Length: 597
Ligand code: OXD
Ligand code: MN
Image (cartoon, rainbow, N blue to C red; front, top):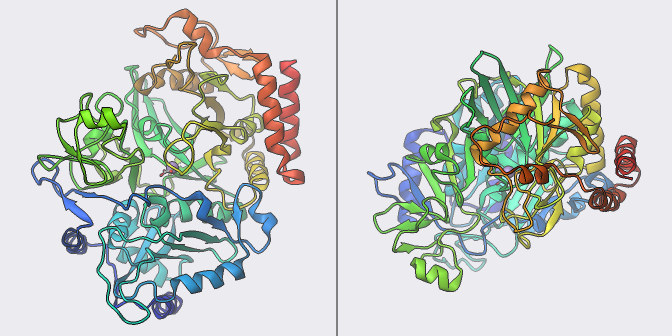
C-alpha cells in the first residue's frame, strides 16, 4: 500500500537514518540482529548450555520503567483525554515531535516493523507498523507480536493500520556532522510517549524500555485500541486470560484485571491446588473483548509473548514461568551469574555467592544486605514467546478467541478489601472496576506502596475520558444482557494485625476461582454482604489449607466505618469526572453508603 511506504519515507526524511531496513520477522533476521546487539554491548549472550539462545540487556539506569509523566493523549479536545490523562494539544505536540525527531536517527539504522496484534488475519486482529531505531525493540517486538511479512501482507492487502514511530533519541551524528560513539543503551533525558487517538497514531521518543518502546503493547493494544473499541463497540482491557477445565468436562474462561506487577503473570499460569481443576494460559496482560454473534463476550489475547516482571518469579511462586524461560528469552535488568546465567530476587530462596548486578557491578548477598541494593532491578523483565509456555492453551492463537464466563478485578490492598466478593449484576461489577485501588508497584515511576486509584487497572492505559470509559462498559453490558459474564472483586494481599499476609495466594488462589465458578454455575449461592456476594460458611474449599478460622473471618471482614471512609474517598475521586461520570456510578456509590450506614 502506497500510504505505508509514503509514511516510512516521510519518517526517514525527518529522522535521517543511515539505512532503512524492512523487517521480515525471520529467524535469520533475529540472529543477525542479536549478533549485532552483542557486538554493540547491548546484549550479553547467556551460556548456550544453561540458557540457549537467550540474552541479557542492561538498560540505562535512568530508563527502567514506563514514564507516565511523559505519556500524553493528544486528542483534539482536552476534555476527551479526561482528568486522568496528560493531555497536549495535537498541533503543539506534533510541532514538538517534529523538533525532537528531526535528525534523531542520524548514524543509525531505521527498522520498519510490520506487526499484527492478534493472529494474522483474525477477525478481531489489528495491524500496525512500528518504525524504530532500536534493534533491541525489533527483536523484542518479534517475541511480543506477530511481526514481519505476513503482517505487511495484511497492510498491503488494504487492512487499516496504525503508524507507530519510535526513536531512542540519541543520534550518532551531531548537527555539525561530528560522529559520536554509541552506548549500549541509548536513550534521551527528554521523553515523550504520545498518542493521537483521532488519527490513531503513536509517536514515542527518548526511551528504549518496555511499554515506552514496544509500541504494540500499552500504546496500541490498550491506549489506541481502547479508543477503537469505544467507537466500534468492544473493550480493550488490561487483563490476563485463562481457561479452567473441570475434571467432569466443564470449562470456563476467566479474564482478570489487576494493576501492574500485582501477580498477573502468576495467576495467568496458575497451577491449581484443587486437583479437579486444570488451568491453561491464554494471555497474561491484555485482552480484547467483543460481543459475539451468540450474544456472549469473546476474548482474544492480542499479544504473542510475555513481558513479565522477573523478581518474585520462582519455582514456588510461578514454576510455569520458570519452565517457560529455559531458552529463547531476552532478559532486561536482571543479574548475571558467574556461569553466564541469570538470577533475580525470588528465583531461588538463596542468592548465589557472587553476581554482576543489573548496573553491571559486583554484587554479593553481603553487599545486598549492607546497601539494600537488589541484584535485579525491581522492574526487571523477561521477554519470551507465549508459544513456549508449557501451560499455553491450545486455543491461545484462535482468531475468534474464547467466550468469557467471569471477569475479576483486583488490587493490592493491605486492608479493608475482602478476599472475594461477587457483584450483584453487571452495573455493580462496573462499579467494582471503577473503584479499584492499589498500592503502587515498581512497574511505573513513583513512590512504591502509596495507594492509588486505578480504575479497571487502566489508569495509565485508557486512551480517552475515564468517565466515558465507565459509560462504555455499561453500554457493552446492556448489549450483552443476561449473557454477560459474572463480575467479581478479589484481593490476595490483605494483611493481619501483625502485618503478614492472611491469604497464601499463588496456587491457593484456585480455591477462590473454584468458588466463583461454582457460583457462576449455580452450584453455590454465597451470602449477602454489604459489598456484594461472599462465600457462605463452608462454600470455599479449604481442605488441606492451614488457615485459622480467625484469619478466614478477617479475610472477609467488612468494616462499615472503614468502608464509609472508602466511600468518601471514592466520591472525591469520582468528582473529577464531573458530568461525564455515568449516573449509574453515583447510584452505586449511594447504594454502598446506604448499606454501610
Ligand atoms: C506491564 C505493566 O508492563 O502493566 O505489563 O506495566
Ligand atoms: Mn500490564
